[in-house]
Amino acid sequence: MEYDIKWYRFNPLFVPLTTGVFATIFYFVFKFTPVYNPIKISVYTILILFSSFYWIKEAFEDLVEKKEIGTGILVIAAVIGSIALGLWSEAVFLSVLYGTAEGIEDYTYARTRRSIRSLLKLVPKEARVILNGKEKVIPAKDLKIGEIFIVKPGETVPTDGIIIKGSAHIDESSVTGEFNPVFKDSGDTVFAGTTNTDGLISVRVTSLFQDNTVSKIIELVEKAQEAKSKTQLFIEKFGRIYSPIVLITALVLMIIPHLFGVPHSLWDTRAISFLVAAAPCALIMSTPVTIAAGIGKAGKHGVLVKGGTYLEALGHVKTVLVDKTGTLTLGKMSLVEIIPIKVNKDFLLSVVYSIEKFSNHPIAKALVKEIKPLKHQKFSVSHFKEISGFGVEAEIGGNLFYIGKPENSKDNEAFKEHTNSSFEDGKIIVIVRRDSYVIGILALSDAIRPEARITVEELRSRNIYVAMLTGDNKNSAYRIAAKLGIKDVRANLKPEDKLKIVEEFKHKAGTVAMVGDGINDAPALATADVGIAMGAIGSDVAIEAADVAFMSDNFKNIVFVLDLGEKARQINKQNIVLAITVLAILIPLTLAGLINIPSAVIFHELSELTAVINGVRAGIGT
Ligand code: ADP
Ligand code: MG
Image (cartoon, rainbow, N blue to C red; front, side, top):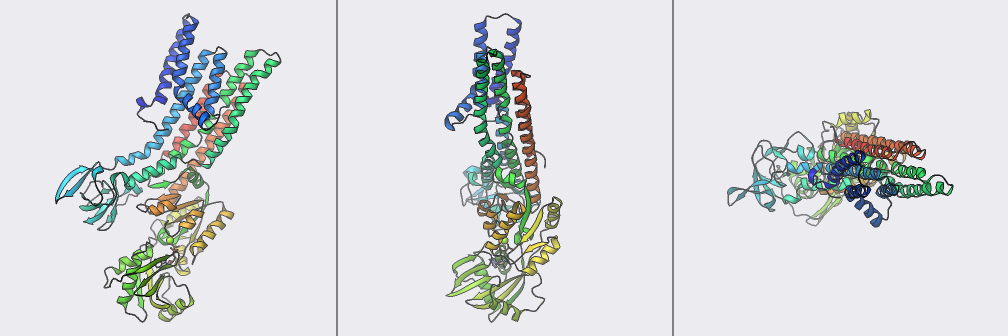
């Protein structure tokens, strides 16, 4: 249900609370002054109708639409039962308390879900556009694609766009959770809600105000908060069987003693207390708030968790498999060696530049960036093809070119012939082939992420097994693994090998998370219990492919998200244990007649509210 969360408009909570106040007043009035019975009954009837207005509607909706006997129906039965026994004040307080608890619950849930909207407040409502060479302030929602706006130092970007002039350090913490400002230059993308800390930049609009990255994040988070977790689905399934049993048991409790001549009202009140005590409200509320709170908190840290199932799975992760290039390393490689073979260097670089321009792989990006300032030509390229885990292929002037890792013996021969033994030491080797002849060898070196080592240590201190999976060569892989203290290294993998390894780990090591860049690791990410993509901001493909997406490319987020999952798991466990314990204590007490209807109601609602408040904890803290 969508609620307006301004409290005075929030009827589902406001109504039962005010009715509660009136019910209390009338209760004492009727207690101490003799009132004609029909008046009393009319007042109580009105109070019941008012206080139950919202929850009765929901209960019947469940019954009619989902054909389900939910907790609401159990409470309706208890209210009707109380009235039938002439226990009017019990009936009123049952309705009021149940309505209040439901209202608090819905309110809390709605607030938790809406908390991510605070991100929108960071996006300015106005933009400085340049129209006919003049600066003009217009509402940001009127910005059209292709228009140019400027952002001065200290100002916040109104919508996503590409810098066309100027450069600046941009504070992206609102979207990525990352506090170090990022340097952005001509051609780089800036996102709505991020702040220009120094320079003056002109930006060309690439997405409308309502479609910008922040809006997309909010939409995804809100959708994810609603996606039910496995535990939640299981509890609901259980409730569908359990609740009708409770209802039937209560009816039997009323009828059977009567058949044996036991005084009617004794077992009748017990049956009603039982109905209230046995309703599984706390159990049903044990997980949804926790999940919404946890996912909301992650969203505010620039981490998208795409549903309760994944948040739960994160709390169970025993193994983290990590891609190397771009995940453990910065993926910002530098070209350290260029060896042309029977062609000139200029031609070799021109081929590489013209083809790699079309690839998104970190190696391709690095090559393009490094070659750009060097003297080279631009060739027209056709039939471009990305060979996942190997490299790229394309045609130039009728010749087929391959740029990628050495994959056959001819490549290796050429490699041995043209390089010396120290060459391969830890570098990424890229072969350039024209038809079947190697025409060049390139070597790149990549730097380890500054946070990688400490993150691996933190994972290990949580008893999590860490292994590196990479498509790169063994030398390069082992050199980096050694520096990070990762002992399990699998190198030279094709994408399908990565997938197989993920499956093996799932079999022998429980819940497996795989961290990659989300672009060329998509199959492995999809196979893992939790597939995590790093640096997903601005990349719909990566967000799409992953179960969890880090907006920034800070590898340390893995620790944050595993801890969040663990906390959510603990809270859910506490809530379930609490709910079952309360049921296990209250049910026998009501059956033994040791607890009356009002006490059953109060304990029952208290356990439900405790579960809700405990759930909110998942969204609190850092
Ligand atoms: P990783 O598992 O380290 O992320 P990938 O599976 O993405 O590696 O790629 C494996 C190897 O394939 C890379 O180390 C590189 O040698 C080669 N490769 C992949 N794509 C390209 C490309 N666009 N250009 C050159 N080489 C590439
Ligand atoms: Mg990769």
